[in-house]
Image (cartoon, rainbow, N blue to C red; front, side, top):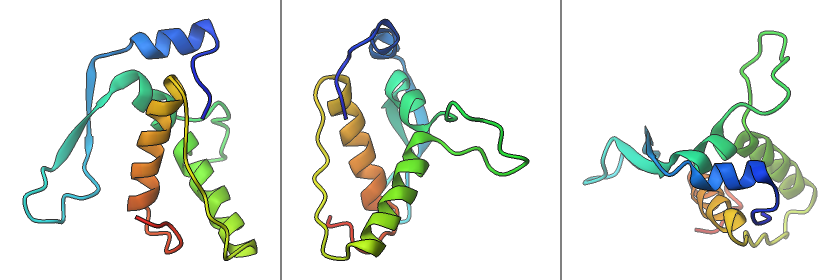
Length: 111
């Protein structure tokens, strides 16, 4: 994931309020129902993608789109190893995406 490069990216960085989101690990003992995430980073990764014309289908976000592409890559290249990295804004997005990928249920994701 790339770092802050545009004015829009900088605005994303500055949206520092916390957003409450469902905790995908809430099924485990001691885990809270929700987690708090930087609202700008959450909107960037989990907000609706640019193309919202889905013909009534669920609107996908960037995270869902990347996970779907990742599933296709793993199917085509079963031995593939993926390292998720980023810098600046990209570092935050990489961390959030890595958490989502680990919770996604894709069997190829090493936790």
